[in-house]
Amino acid sequence: MTLARYQHESIPALTTARDRINAREMSRCTFGSGGTCCRVCNMGPCQIIDGVETMIGVCGATSDTVAARNFARIVGAGVALQVEEAREMVRIFMATAKGETPYALADENKLRELARLIEIDPDISDLKTLALETGRSLLAAFGNQDETLALMKIAPKNRRRIWKDLGVTPRGFDREVVELMHRTHMGVDQEFVNIVRQTSRCALTDGWGVSRVISWLTDILFPTLPAPTVKPEGLRQDMINILIYSQGPLAMETLKEAAIDPEVINLCQRSSATGINLVNGSIGDQETDLLTGCVEIMVVSGSCIMPSISRIIRSLHTRLVTSSNSMKMTGAEHFELTGPAARSNAITILKMAVTAFRGREKVLNPAEENKTEQRSQPQFGIHSLDPAQLAGRISKGDIRGIALIMGCDNYHQQQDSHAAIAEILLRNDIFIISNGCAANSLARSEEMQGNRVWEMAGSKLQAACQEMNLPPILPMGTCINSSQLLQIADLLIQQGMGKDLADLPLVAAAPAWISEKIVTAGQCLVASGIDVFFSALPVTGSRKLADYLQHGCRTEYEACWQIDKEPNQMAQKIIARIDSKRQELNQANSLFVLTATTSA
Image 1: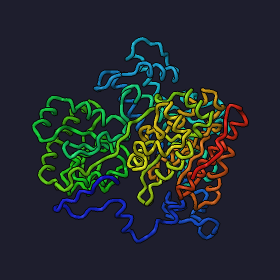
Image 2 (image 1 turned 90 degrees about the vertical axis):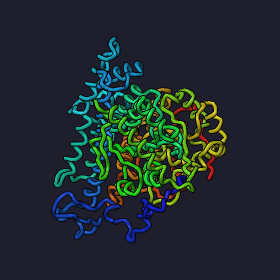
Image 3 (image 1 turned 180 degrees about the horizontal axis):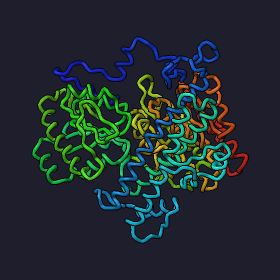
Image 4 (image 1 turned 30 degrees about the vertical axis):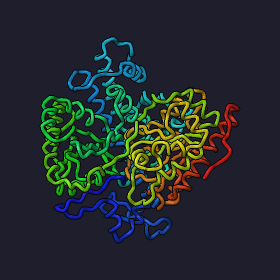
């Protein structure tokens, strides 16, 4: 962590997640980490041991069934989170069309493009009418029952055929989550492959469905939005700091718009602060950000908020605000940042922050001055990429392949695995995109800053990135949008590079994942034909399920999960997979050149 820990003499010792891990005297539960603890009925909980007849469930459930159900529920929870985020975005989009929000339909071309995709007449002249028609169609997709979703047409024909043959083509967004929960109820689906196929169907709903909806509507409403992983200036001693933990753009945009209210400006000028600083946070920083002692308000909405926050703020001047009815916390004040009262609530929050700043002035420890440095980085979107340039550089071998580094900061890992993997990949001319907390982790790393990251990149990658006017590591926003790699694959296929995602030298890695939604993204990518690399997966208690996910899925989807706890070994496996894909493309297309050497 780059933040200094604030510890005023009046504050008792407070612990962080890392402290609590170090203080625990027991290892992680073998049954839980292996996926074989079953608690779906009241005859349990049952701890299952693979291959031991006396250690099956009371109902007779084997390790294969139990581990598959648990894996499915992890993915289902991640999809449910994304579905609700998308639903809220559609509602805000429609409210904006009606003039009920401070936002605007800012990108008309994107709106017409989305309308065309979901089979709404894009030539409707009245923008409000077009937006409402589009919104109604998107809302209908949540409850769609049997028809294939219009958004699935984005996927290549070969991939859609694979999904159809396996029976995993997504239908309604809500439908697949409900179906998965139904199947994993006590006594329903018991065959592990069948359970995982519904898991794939559910995961595909995210990457090809709701994540795309979130991405499209964000572009329409906020085309110039800096991605939520940005910490523009970091925490500032001289400013009123409002720390925002929200996966979507709504909380930040509403507070940003309220910050120019004359009453707020006047109140701020009457304090000794030089301004209001709106800062987006990540899971790895939230406790240490607060312990700097210079956060006035922490606004939380969405996922990945540690319950420990409620305890920490009791000893600080900081006030905690929840902004969504989907989540409330002990000790927090609640102000909705969507709906008709959003703007007035945002103004109230900013006024609270100014008042809280006065409390910080009185207790700030001068020794902590200027120790709140944060790493910041520009953010990019799919529009930042020139498809022809990117495809050309991959074809020539200047870019060996593309790796998405995604996920979280896991305090069980002492090593900065994101940076360790990125360094090896860069040296081997592999272009990196990153999102969410993984992007923040790379931004915090000394080795990934400024000229250092360019010096680390292989000579071919350096030249390619200079031509494309892009850095070797491309931060692409929040983990709520798990579809970035799928969208890049779309662009490459449109350039004639293969006919399916499984043809392309693309991979994804989550070496320090925590959240269920990251496993959701992983299963979506596997079912889409892209290998994913994780440090662990809670399925090892079933040999058959683990083998299916790590090997059997390749037969069905042409991609699979690969598990390795050691970052260097994971990086080498990523390089090997990318080279394998390049070799296959080289055989199919003489335009391709295989990069021969690998650097440690």
